[in-house]
Amino acid sequence: MTPLDPWIPRLLDVWRSARRRGPGRPGGPRDRLASDELKTVGAGVRRLSLGLTRERSLAGERYFDDPGLLGAYLLFYWPISFAQVTSLLAELPSRPRELLDLGGGPGPAAFAALGAGAERALVADRSEGALRIAKALAREARSNVTVLHWSGGAPPEGRHDLLVAQHVLNELWGGAPDRIARRAALARSLLERVRPGGTLLLVDPALRETSRELLELRDALVAEGVAVRAPCLFRGPCPALSRPTDWCHAERPWEPPRLVAEIAREAGLHKEALKMSYLALAPPGEGWERAPEGTVFRIVSEPLAGKGRRRYIGCGPDGRMGLALQDKHVGEENRVFGELARGDVVRVTGGEPKGDGIGLGPDVRVSRLARAGERLGR
Ligand SMILES: C[S@@+](CC[C@H](N)C(=O)[O-])C[C@H]1O[C@@H](n2cnc3c(N)ncnc32)[C@H](O)[C@@H]1O
Image (cartoon, rainbow, N blue to C red):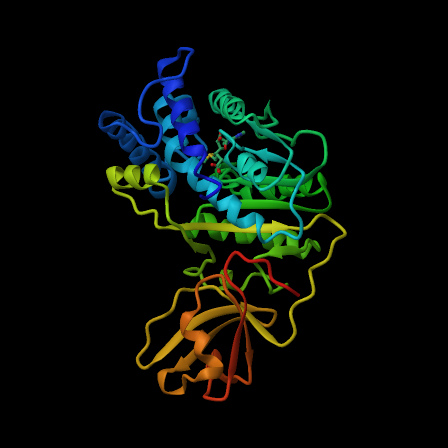
């Protein structure tokens, strides 16, 4: 049983009630869509996917005013956003007791945090339709969620253990030449509303453009002394920005619930992994956490093809560099190198500088300090 499982019947009930616009429990299977429903939702998801992640023509537009798109979002992207935040909460130093989900739409981040132990949440968004859905979900789950109209200006008053802005920053001021500066100003005012020990969690799609813009925002804040709780170990300007083709994102294995898998198939999409770009930021006055001892890297690539060797890109306190181990040098002390995944954190003991990276010889020891998504013990 995953934290998402109990939500599938609730999402379906709320979606069917909203479609019927009538009271009473709607009919229909509570774990899946009937075939005509699946066609409708699949078509909506195709439009959303095209408009938000490919052509980007919907980004920043009021697509939730279209009930078909809001419904498609609810049944397909809501579970993905929920699973992303559930996974990211595990990396924070403490579990939030309450939170603000800014640009939360129908509130997946809020409900994910409530599922992980939070007691109450505030969801703020400009879409009245999405906020109505968030309220209906809260009624279904008997959760302590309030909603607030927010149309992109100053964030609501009050301080919080956790503030989340998920898949919304990339939609704000899109196309404006000063969009990064304006997002940075918003992020600064959000950081001021984080209680000590709390976190501002920014999540955006794992696309090159949206990911690089999140990294630019990171650099602006880090230059002012803001500390990154995760995923960065490097404290300077993000090395992924030095080459225009690079970016940095997370990818976590995920078994989607049957509802999501069936919609994905209908819409012609793949959702076997959670992909996202994210930053967990500490409030002003809280420094970077101590880096683990030794030469440490977060793996920021998938395994890279190479003849007779395994290679990754790592990013650690000393920067971003290639890490390579020739097949003939695989042994007991470095065997884990062959099993690493994007997001894992490793310590490399005894590597030699080679080209623009580190070569791992037979005597090099590699140990995994944390798997992707685990909090790094310091
Ligand atoms: C892709 S949805 C993300 C919803 C939810 N946070 C998630 O991750 O699943 C983007 C949300 O940002 C909201 N949004 C976009 N521009 C906004 C603005 N200028 N002011 C307030 N909300 C905005 C939309 O209404 C929508 O709910």
